[in-house]
Figure 1: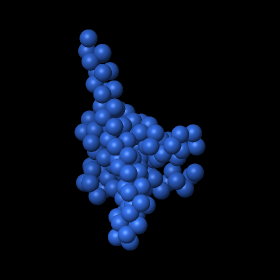
Figure 2: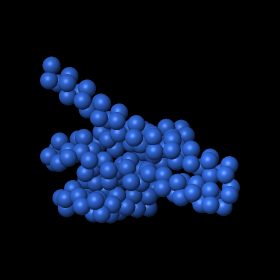
Figure 3: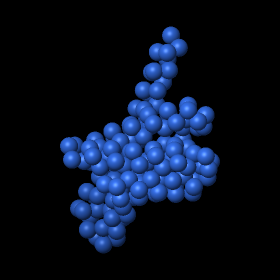
Length: 141
C-alpha cells in the first residue's frame, strides 16, 4: 500500500511537470493523484472497477476544486494531473494490440472496458463541477 502511495504521488507529480503546471502546485497535484488512486484501490474490494473509477474521479474533482480555491489556481491544473493514474491507457493499448492480432472478441471486450472507464472519469469530473456549482449557488442565496 505504501509503495502505491509513493508511486501514484510521483507519477502524478511527474505528469504535472509534463503539463507545465506551476512548481508551487506540484506537491498538491501529487496529493490529488495519490488520494484518487488509493480511493480507487480501496473501492475495488467492494465495487467493480467502473464504479470505483467514478467515485475516485469524483473525489479528485472535489479535492481539485478545494485546492483551486485555496491556492487561487485553475481547477484543471489539479484535476488533469490527478486523473492520470486512473486513465485506462493499458486497456486501450491491449485492445489495439488484439485488433492487430485479429483477436476481435477480446479486442472489443477490452475496448468497451476502456471506453466505460473513460466515461466514468468524464462523468466524475462533471459531477464534481455540478456539486461545486450547486454549493456555490446555495451559498450565494
